Length: 266
Ligand code: IPD
Image (cartoon, rainbow, N blue to C red; front, side, top):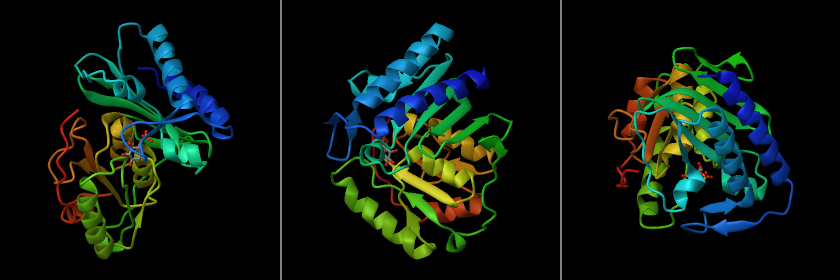
């Protein structure tokens, strides 16, 4: 698969995001006051889908905005692109400079190529399976911290505003007591990239979708990190949950702080 194609696609999509970022926005609410979509999300998704289907007419496409229109996710062994056109839409709306396009390419249900681009800070992350992870061309390595007590974590409140929030509060409480602190930067893809670049040691969240973390999870592993479900079992892209860490010990200690939140699979 062409890394060059994915990098150019991300850069062009980033131009659309940057153009919308400084303008007055048309905002709609999806399932809660924290679940937003703007005309830029739709514009970027349509642009990316068109480019992919011109270049690879037989490939499948899973995109946040196509699926939120009610379409059921079909993830098969076929070559599949999994796209979040704007991850961190609330940040985009508020001009908090952590939003990105997230592009993952999977074959036989395994992500092989990942690109996450924050056009506001001009930070381009990429990884290919077995070839390492990079930020603007420079190789990335996770932190060498060995335990949670010398770690900073990322976690998110997510876009739900329902009963799951009580468990999220308990999880954050346990995790903050066991670590040096928790950051919420408002983008699942960029939270993974923060683990990959060694700026935080772990990131966990319940309630995410596959397009939020498909690319970021590979970028973490290619930077030398590990991934799992928050309960410590193997990572499952369709499980609506993620835990990525710099090493297994930090992952296990993070996992021990997290109470399970039931979400239906995608
Ligand atoms: C959201 C962001 C946020 C996470 C939510 C996601 P979106 O994605 O990644 O950090 O907490 O769970 O839905 O809606 O901005 O693409």
